[in-house]
Image 1: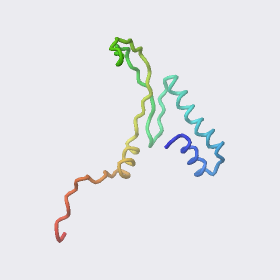
Image 2: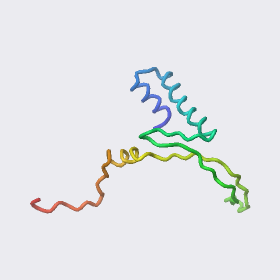
Image 3: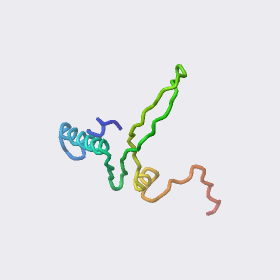
Image 4: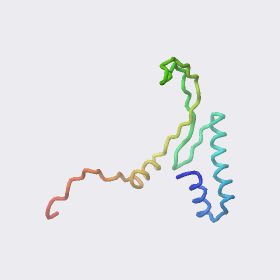
Length: 109
């Protein structure tokens, strides 16, 4: 799903104009980015949480030339899905998807 698809979906479900839906989606994304930029953690119950992780400086290699390159420390965004979201993606509320190699039922059962 792209951002445009998300805007269309919000527009359709909320019965709003596409422009109003675009403002809503942009506002949500901008709020998440702003919060992460100042170091806040965002928690959306039933969906997951966003936060930043600090990466240490390190020495890397230029793959083309093999030269050593200093890679500075930086913050990276990190998303941790909630248990609810994991369960929904994997087949339902609290249910596990059946194994792909399930044994056939016994005859006459």
